[in-house]
Image 1 (cartoon, chains in turn yellow, brown):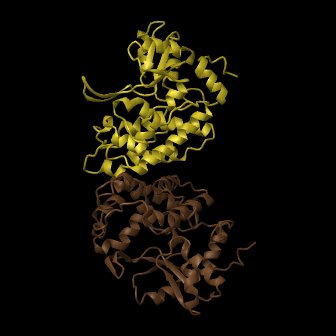
Image 2 (image 1 turned 120 degrees about the horizontal axis):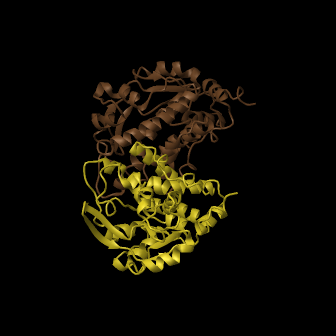
Length: 283
Length: 283
């Protein structure tokens, strides 16, 4: 685990930013640092990577987009302002999120990549390459993504995260200044020049499923169940992705139980991400 | 409804064969005839259409395959032998099914067509035509179909239908003599010359979803729930097909409730399809 490997080199008072955290990333990171005797490190996370980029080779990255209005939260959230003031010297467009539940639920990758993979499964396994967004995205797949997004926002609202952005709005906030356009998820993807270069994966053993499901969709399904907000589209996509990859991605996932948070009531969960203090929540 | 329109022209003692019945077709047909005062008509159904064909224009059908070993059942099953003896003059390769639950669950179309549609959704909405089986079928889609098939066979076993064939075996029984080959669902479809001519639909508003789901998958889901044999893959495909078509295909479905059979115990259901007698089952 990264946190365990980093621990010996971290100095009291330092700030670690997970970029992005995925769901629960900074909670888990902080918990591990505490176990390693490094409780005095501040951990924060962004909702997504600030760059749109591809690794071209081990020492070269092709950056083709840069997100404005990317949100960040510290764990605990009482530290968010301080981390943000510091980071804005380098990244002036960063904005605060309510807490790490918001950043954890706001990575659009799981919601966008996974239905694009599943609903293009035949083509991904087929012989010809295709452009993941510009050719793989269709109106009906866009609608599927919007329905999954609504399931995600309902979970956010149940956690009091009323300011969470739809993926469509988030995309516009990030990319409008670079030419992002369109009036729904489908149009936003087939018209945004940032997305034109992405060639679709040729295998299901790809981070669009093997990362986005265990660290994005499964935690969302998990929370939806805990909060009794059914997320049938999320569930259907996870189920089919398990079949396509031949893996049990639910078993590889970071769940509320892994973070020791499965037995908390909602207000205890919110207390914990705000204060970071276990005393408040251990009953 | 066809049954209502046919009723005035049917003569006592006549045999009506639904070709195919889809799930519950002959039960519903017979029930309507009884209401119309034509209780003395025998109704039977096959598990699928005996021909592999396409309508080319209103007066022309292109038949490119002919199924051997197609199963038929009468409702009630006590009539199956008699109907079969008669029909074998024209269709010598027909075989008996245990009852209309078996024929109803044995149409392979819902299990094969629907994941092919859903997992090729992007391509179906895309600009280029493709061959539905020869290009749309891939190893992972074949595995998905096999898992759905296992969910279907589990429902059959729970109904005592131990002789139900897997789709793969059924396909071999039907087409081996015409060149059907391969050792799994994927290979059977991409190698069978019968399948090479099918161009994929260019819309989701197509019988592969709008018929196969309400008259095939939803009744299967319905039975699976009644019998407490979870069918998560069937459920996932129905859910995504609803989104892709923009319809609630569950609401358009023929369910156990529509047939007045939702409150029966399994042995009562089996009594009913064997004897056709409501007296035995009304408690």
